[in-house]
Image (cartoon, rainbow, N blue to C red; front, side, top):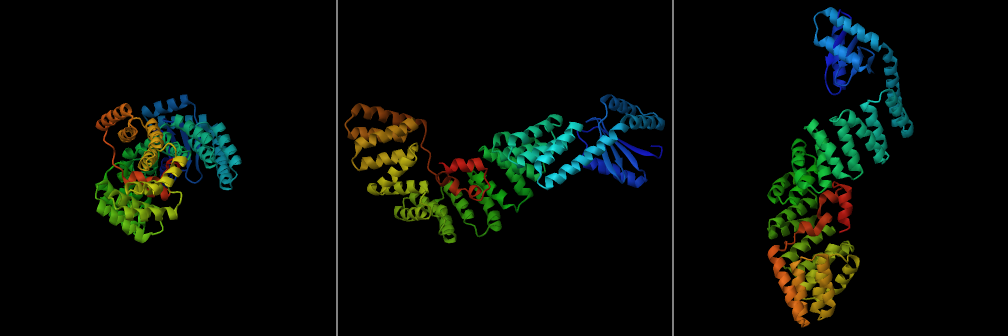
Amino acid sequence: MGGKVIVELKSVEQVVAADRKQLQIYLRLTGLKLGYLLNSGEALICSVHSTAGFRIMKPHRLMMDLLACLFDHLRSQQAIIAGVLLASSAFAHTVSQGGKVEDLAARAERLEAQGKWNDAAAAYREILRLDPRSIPALNRLGALYVRQEKFREGIKYYQQALQLVPNDFGTNLNLGIAYIKSQNYVAAAVPLEKATRADPDNLQARQLLAVALIGKDDYERALPHLERVATLNPKDIGIIYLLNRAYLETKLYEKALASFERLEALDPNSPWVHILKGQAYDGLSYYAKAIREFETARQQQPADSTVRFSLGFMYWKVRRFEEAEVELREALKIDPRFDEAKFYLADTYLTDQKPEKALPILEGLVESDPKNVRVRLDYGNVLEKLNRNEDAVPQFQEALRLEPTRAEAHYQLARVYQKLKRTADFHRELELSQKFQKQKLEEQESLLKASGSRGDPTHELGLKPARLRKAEDRR
């Protein structure tokens, strides 16, 4: 204006670096030295210099309203010049404060880089004393505390920033990361959904949102985000594994199989590809194909307990008991604490009419996991087969205490009562077994469920959220 200064009026939620850069370009093109970027959306004026950078100044709201009015009702160049001169006069006293904020920010960044986090935090708090609406200072404070695993303090600063600018992409992203690191996946999903809406093409935001949704076991909602990230970043093997696991968890077995070609190209020597394919074929009841995949995985990793268990489970499922025994025993040689392998080995012995071999395994499992209904039922069955019917009764009763509507448990208890000639109890339990059998068909056992976290590459490769990994390890 008047060959002296450039003024750019904006009305946006927050001025970003690109806005200031654009005004600097204008200054260089025109040869002018000073420009003003006026943003009525956050009551902010930036004085931009072509060589010396910029300073942020906070005007009085009344002054911003006056400037907005002046610019809304421009009638002449003189009016613009008058408005700019008025603004320059009113805000001249804030320039030195802006310089102090810049100096403090530079000092805080140096201290942060040196690992002097408490000193850096003090500098950022001083910035907030001078400029309580500083979104960058609030974000940096939040990051400092989160880095030290002081999640409550860090989250507090992110929330303060969002009270000023609720839809700010960076702050919502940072808050989501803080919640994920503190393993609060339910809370993490909210700001990450806002970040994704603010920038739909941002891969990091979508990936973190998918992780948060998986963390709260919501694979169905995680799927579209994983698919989008996998499309935009097709060589990210971690995302492809998460995507395939999500397909399996949501029983989209055909989609899982269709995506394995890409996974094999990215990770050709990994047994996990064959484990996942085997799980998908098992879900589709293609048992012969599932077995072939696990046999291939065994060739690649013969000393992997999950591979040997998976193959043993499939042999058990198709009643190839001798082969199942070999694989399950081998899994337990590799990992003696593999409880699922113990259970299916005991069940193999039981089904193959070897109750005496199953007995010590089940006694140990009952002691280590007394609330496991399947273990209680198999233990009761073994005792019954060994003609220890009185001992079998409390095992079936405990199973029903844990799961009162389990038809199989009522039937097995009825059978024992019949052998003990407890006729009234026999008829009662038989009627209950028929009632609950009609209400709910027993779910067919699947390898996906049986192998748990051990059969999940997203767990074994460190891709699944920590809280879920710990929970599954206790099963």
